[in-house]
Length: 156
Image (tube, rainbow, N blue to C red):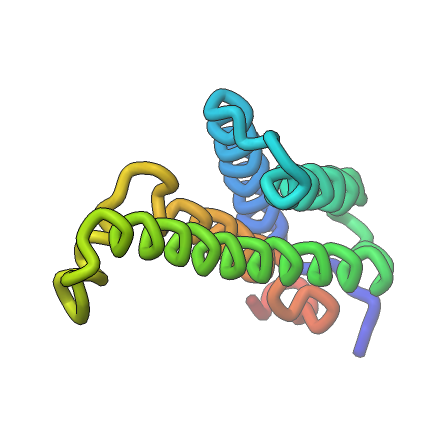
């Protein structure tokens, strides 16, 4: 592998993706804070993970576009994005289970598709809302896809 810079368009695209990622992280954190999603330790997990993701994103964005960031920086960013994905997946499961328990308390005869439909349409907690963290984590991973293997300028 050579130590050449990626094409300017690829660098610009990656910067824009990181900007979109930061906007998504800020919006999601704001939403969680406004909803009071900090009552216990488990509710702090997405906020802490979002904070780590924002720091990792800012750190990656602060690197010069002319010189690719150190492999350690890219790997740390990828690790935090995977943590964000896992956090979103776990949150979806927790929200789904909480809704299912509540729905079954209200109507023990619910089962199958009727139960599933009722659970995913519940407003509190929104069962699929943590999936936003999964999408943001995937966006972050896409922004650094093959970053260390960028082609020489003019080939990408």
